[in-house]
Image (cartoon, rainbow, N blue to C red; front, side, top):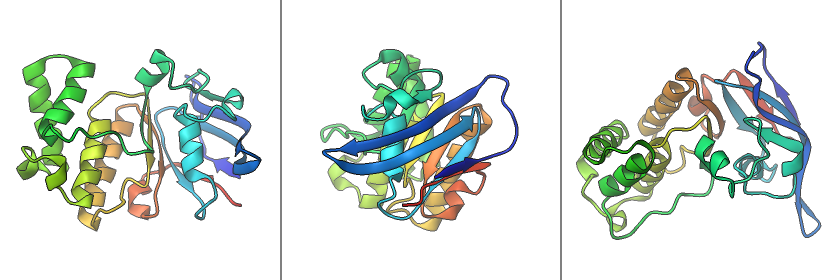
Length: 219
């Protein structure tokens, strides 16, 4: 496995892994990884099925204890039990929980308000984000009224509604048609332009067309 990119970041890398691996019950889920990702850049995560792409993103999201000691994410050991770490890292690796009894606008507004405050302003920001994600006409619907692609976009909205120094996305284009995949890619590019670091595992190359580096997992 290798990670390649040019340029230097005086603030230090967002992600550093040295020989990090993940093994459960004697089964290797991720072979040793050496990786260094500069802050404020978009990197793609590539490899065949079963190579450990999702496992790597879970490790960086602080959800894999095995291997965490050999990684530093934003200068911290990845651990989603630590409040400061959770505040810095937003991930769409495992789909975020969606409340069945709230409309999608209410759910995104709750996430926005929990990070930004301002109840009425949170509703406005949530509505604009859902409009960007082509869900504007569906804002008052409940999750059971949505298609698989619409649920995927709702989950992404819940992640994109909050601030983050590091954004981790696992196949965000799943269930999406090409036009909506491009919308999501554009939103990710905007976040990177604002200084967020992003690692994205995607089969659709349009999702990572602006990537400056690549993590390649070869098993």
